[in-house]
Length: 502
Image (cartoon, rainbow, N blue to C red):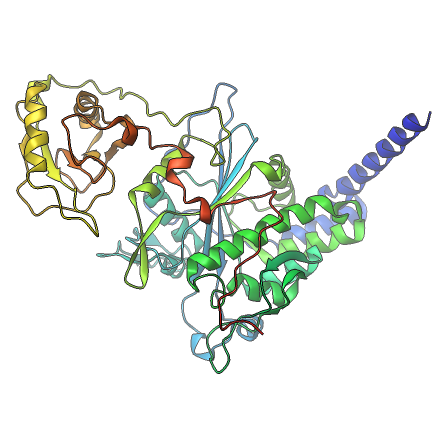
């Protein structure tokens, strides 16, 4: 009897919560409808993509489901009194805003897992052509590489979306952007998020103007308001003081926020729900495909389906180039894992498998292929004559038109076969198959004029591509686990640098 009574009570609570949500969120009549319209009016949207080309949409799985990709953007816009107060320098007023936080949220097609990947703000990339939808101004493709955070100033968040699609080949369904003021108001509405440091910490070294005014005691602190903004902006004092450390702290905050929203009573308390809805619609600027409360509500229902233990957060694999960073070939593998909807926690039964091209290959002796030596690394000289040796191996396989490039050796981590257009994809795959190179290493590129095999540092000897290198396209082989967090892990603490303690 007691168990039935408890179940009945829980059932009544659930029905009550459902009723509250129906009135407050869907706003079916009366005051609820008026409030619903008010929330809709709060939402300020932007065009999803400002580029000329869109990445292809993913192929549905056997159940007809497709992944969901959302780009989360944190803007440093200081062109309002409140943002200036929270963000500092008057010299920044009037400057184009920067996308200082960029995270791609990938929700699997079956909704069992979620992956969140940060790209450091100082990543050097080529930006695509973008057109400002308000002014019509055209920003041409950059000649060289620039910092990725400048994409936001080229017409708005839609240019940041276009940049990500160009780099990753991942179709992005939505974006959500928030500025300093939005972070503060959302953190207050949530009621505090737990974060942890391993020592008493200050965000600014004594006598220095660099850093933030963050000050925390050793252990766990529930932060909200301006303190939450300071946490998300701090890098001086965390780990090695880099943007990579800042991304790690941001992942910790996001993981804790997800757990907090699931565990506390926010969504069973109508007053808190009302406040959160009010703050969220005012703080977050989504794309024009999320222009109503109902669409945002439906999206939130999708995002809450994976359990925290199946949420993986990480940073794009990178290499330092002076004070900046650049994506590595492992980053290309990471983007492919996401395109193939492979879970980054390594618990997915699916494997990253490339499909055989529908383009038929020419006869082996009719395929022209150029071989390049890319075996040089930052610490190791290139293997002399490597391109010639692999060319001879190809000729022995029947690719009699193979030639070797006599240019100075390149530094390429992973062996790759590039082709410039769809009509040469089959030829490129035939070359790869003949030498045991995985099809995942066959990539289209506008920087080659024909089928081009670049022998990387992962293949320094032998005529056949090494099997252990061929098996490298897995999450465990691709990700730096020291930069990876699990959404259910509440025991991590950020390491505090010496000199930033009190």
